[in-house]
Image (cartoon, protein in one colour):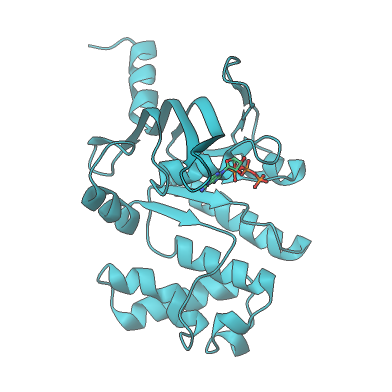
Length: 255
Ligand SMILES: Nc1ncnc2c1ncn2[C@@H]1O[C@H](COP(=O)(O)OP(=O)(O)OP(=O)(O)O)[C@@H](O)[C@H]1O
């Protein structure tokens, strides 16, 4: 039997999606006399189901590199990255196999970058529907959902059947976000998702993020604008440059 406090602690623990423990990364530039460049050091934080953590800190402090380490684009030098899977099992993203990470990227962990990468002649609606079709969903249903998302993000219908490579920066970014969130994910990594958007488009994206939170998706996002952080983030984690000072985690109420 659990006491109420023990039960609540257990429930809280069960909701954890991702735990980073003392991860560090130094880049070694082998083609430049093995010069060493510090990526980030001693980073420790965790994110729960339905929580959005905003990563903040000055330019070059390692924010994007941390997201890339979680997605395993970069290998870390030390520490662990425990990801709590949909089925309840826990996997260390810092050390699991390549095939495991590829499967997780397809089914559970999404990464929305600022830049859209699609092949020429693929239309916007096809680009957005693709991750869902890849998971086995019917093409018609996937295209319908893609259209709904594009509309939600304010993309004009006349653009749906055109290659997004011809779109404006802000339109491309919104197509990229739609593509990143269309398939159900457990954890989303967002690298400046509102960077090139005007106020109205930013609001649409932030509303979508709030909706994803309500659906239990855990998110880690890099944002530079305090007002945006205040609107969507539950937690703010400040990255500092020195290895000797523990980075500061601050709790703040979501607006
Ligand atoms: N592939 C790489 N090879 C060498 N150094 C790298 C690599 N990726 C990142 N770095 C270095 O790691 C440091 C952190 O870079 P990162 O892009 O993570 O910073 P950031 O906090 O996201 O910056 P910004 O806010 O300007 O985007 C920088 O000094 C950068 O030069």
